[in-house]
Length: 250
Length: 212
Image (tube, rainbow over all chains, first blue to last red; front, side, top):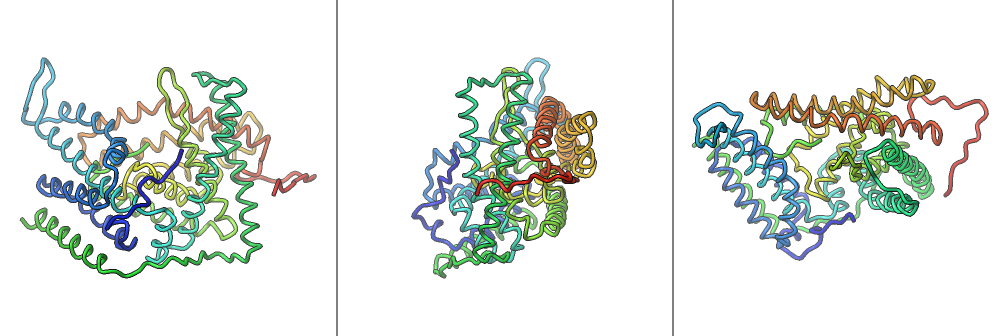
């Protein structure tokens, strides 16, 4: 089942202006993505962790979410230290671990943790609809916002439809195996999803036209000014300037 | 087919971002107001389709279907895939912000290439259309793996092994996507041929507008 487990809460982060959160997390992610020094990356990880704590999220749930990248990271830790040329740090039979490979794998792990944790703490803590309105206020093309909000609105409907079709197949004793019959059945299921999505889109569009829709979503959302916004902006901006200084000027 | 956060270098991320912005701008320009709702809802269908896991031997792979999305939406695949990937990030924390550009490019560029190379063929007779549809699904993944591999190679030459592993690991996915796309196109041809590009309505038109 699709859900937005972090979107609603009563924390300092949830109360911040969505635009502030979007801007901060974008700049922070870019900074972390281009940084190379280990000091900077470790501090960035701590900042991200601090943001997760500040948002008072369920840490187990965050861990489960961030763990989707673990499989990939394990692969990197298995491959990179062995394939890199350089100073060896360990040996086991014919396998030699090299220092630059270990450093690269560690750097990638820290970066992905910092970026994903900050994303979870700052962006996943708002509903997608709120985010659409905030992005609209930030001046993104209104067609793109329209697309985003439409896609978000109908993901849940189409997922239900998928579950219904899946249940119908299972009731008719369909069991997925590695054979052409399975792939054909799934292809028809997907085709049906697309056909129904297109038919639904047609009806939705007509209904919107009937209600006077002329190509622009009017957003009623108000983002109240509050002292927390400025405080947060000052704190994160100075932290990021500090990180940039450590990375490039030290 | 996803490149994780923290792997790619700044210039590669920037290039991916710029190309995706350009593709999205073209896509949005071509999507007029009449077709936005359709693109949005089809992009949620793409999102849901990516949750479907099909079995391959003892394991399973999830569908990507960027070939079909390309056939249906053309350049609109760029904004549609961008939005779907962004929502995957919001709902599942698959990927963050900095790789959004590159990851969109990995799936949307092959989609557009497939649209131009196979779009004209899928309305032909079955003997041409079905192999073309298979090739469309196959190339969607193959080109995606090539773009992903290029992104890795420009970051770090030592990623050659990872790149080769990535392309070869996707070989079963390419075949499955090819089969799925061929069956799916066959289905569209029977059920709703106007989903596919270059559709010319037959002279006797029994179109009905569906339920309301």
